[in-house]
Amino acid sequence: MEHSHQEHNHHQHQRQQQPSSLQQGIRQEPGQQREGRSHFLERPDQGVPDDVDVSDATAGYSHGHLHDHGHNHGHSHREGSRRVDNYDSDDDEDFDEEEALHFHKIIKAFSQYKATAMYANHRRRTDFYTLPERQQKMLPSYLERMEKVDAAIEDNYEIIKMICEDQQIFVNDDRPMVKLGLNEKAKNAAALRIRQQDMEKVQGTIKQFVRDWSEGGKPEREAIYQPLLQELKSRFSSITPENRGSINVLVPGSGLGRLAFDIAHEGFSAQGNEFSYYMLLASNFILNKTSRVNQFKIYPYIHSFSNIIKAEDVLTEAWIPDVNPSEIPRGTDFSMVAGDFLEVYGQEEENIGKWDAIVSCFFIDTAKNIVDYLETIHKILKKGGVWINAGPLLWHFENTANEISIELSLEEVVELAKTIGFRFEAQGTSKSTYMANPHGMLKYVYECATWTAVKI
Ligand SMILES: C[S@@+](CC[C@H](N)C(=O)[O-])C[C@H]1O[C@@H](n2cnc3c(N)ncnc32)[C@H](O)[C@@H]1O
Image (cartoon, rainbow, N blue to C red; front, top):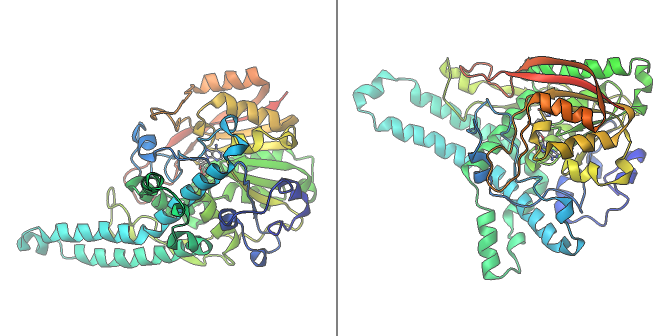
């Protein structure tokens, strides 16, 4: 396959057929690959699953509106809802079509960023004009701020265009709609309708860049990624850094890929797995389309004026990336695999007993069925392999219509893991925010559970 430049990952591709244009959308072009860059491995047969109404999916969250307090934002709950046991190869065409539709919708959401953000800002302006002139005069700089926010939206949109660069074709044509009957067209049009939640995911993706790839995200990364990394290194301290390439480390739910990158940067063979196209497109951009530190400027906090101390704080900028993503040691294998964790890793013989370590961060509570997650983690680890985890238990599907959700306490999760065959060797807690605005008056602090468990 043209997109793999590293021998040892070829097995991931061997069974794939000629990719559709959809898969080409995620794949990086051969010319863009550089030594040490991550590469994306797509899974035509098991990729991102079908639609569930996101408005339902998010509505039920205990703290479901999307600012910097919930780590659910930015990630589509529709993704992951198709299960392999319902999967029938005769459905291939339908499945591809659904996936294409879903992908199309996400590109559409990105492409509508500027218009919707401008509209929201314009509303602030028109609201201001409803005030009596006397009151307007009391707020001399308010309108000026709107001008600056307009300009910042333009700047963000430039980044978004780059994120979607190779995918623009999907925005400009009706591919998912052609050759469909009237009813199906109506159904698809509904599936492609962009809602506020979708726009919040686009905005969440911009904020996620801060967490993973800017100087401003350092405190969050030091609070939660660093201890995971330290633990990984100490677990494999008998292996010299030059030989860490023989250690296979999987990072499920890898978001924008920084933790997986940091692990690869330390010399381990690291693979991130992620199923949200928002995340996949954005991490593809950062890992494969940036070439120097602080190359791009984004404005992550312009979308909400709530809980702001100084007016200029909404215009706080972040420069990305804070490190050069191509700087990983020679010979280190670093890849990102697109698809649902359970489907990609739980169903394939080749993954059984393959992994030396699994490092999960803010991930296990994305499970509908935590037992499936833990069984899969156990199954794919080598005997004696290590599972290093950190995160809260904000069950993503709690109170979500038409979805099962098994919501255990921390103690129950630990007991379950022991029942499945883990020995806990370390347990603790670690305080951390998630995509918090450093200047904001609202910060949710998670007292994350941390552990290291060994497969017996
Ligand atoms: C809360 S985020 C954490 C991201 C990253 N680990 C971090 O700490 O910033 C959870 C991530 O898991 C992804 N995810 C959720 N369920 C998944 C699944 N079944 N397979 C793969 N990725 C999944 C989401 O799309 C999201 O990016």
